[in-house]
Image (tube, rainbow, N blue to C red; front, side, top):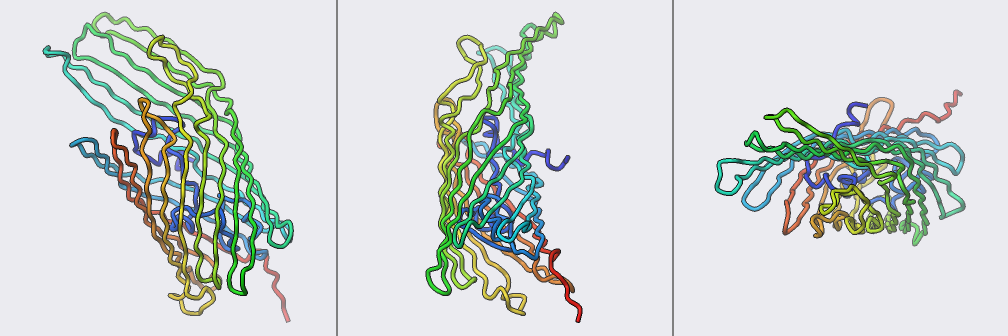
Length: 413
């Protein structure tokens, strides 16, 4: 659990909204930059569309776990800084419970918060300097159970029911070299214990004997999280030893938005898969708490978030998944995405996100198993804003998919 609690980001942009939104993809589709909505595999767990669970092979138990490491360069004006971190990403499992019903359980991140930066300046022409420091940590985690049902030939539906939990602390402190000036610290915090419900659909249509087209769609239900965010302001003076503190709370002040997704995937001869996804999160309808600059009150405000649009294209190629030749069973993956920001900063849009990825699915072969995979991918992400910090991140994702024949019946002759 301590690994889950680690922050997966160093980005100053995680101080806004609910933090940096997690990709939530697994090892196999991270190589395709998160492509997911139209993908149906019997040997992989596709959490982003629960209708896909109905494709799980009836003989197997699938367990998939992954981690990542990343290096990020931050640049603003003529200043550049580097940071690196690593994070446990996810653990999911899936198996068939009925002839047309698959079930999945797992643990994935929902948002991440982690940053620390500071600045200092001189007051007028005096020798007095003031320092302002910002820091934050935390995030929201998601544990889920999902079911996918193949209603009839071609049509599958599914749902994920999740428990959301986590907390965050964001601090701003302002201090002065003049001992007669107050030092101020403001701490924003909240604890989340709530739920999340997502529905999925997939329609698979054969085109020829070797070609299939799958349409996927998802809907996530937006609602209040039942959390009471608060801000505590503390002022103190080291010369007089006098300090004061006040706390303001916004009841039920956090929420998640309605979300929608649609995707297409074309598969040829179990060798080539190509897909396109579009996702919309309606953050623009969500109000979040902020300190009013004029009155000092901590209140819900609208217009601080924007709808987030994301387009992803990707594909996978395997020469022959049933070949006895190890190298012919390696899966090659590529993908690219573009996403608009969901936060606004000082009334302006936050950074747009561009990303590309490439990866491999490497078969794990031993004396009793040739169905498991080691999924390795590299991803470059650029968060670009003309007026704020530009981030360039290179991320390595490593996932292991164990595909065991737990439910195969042995016959002795």
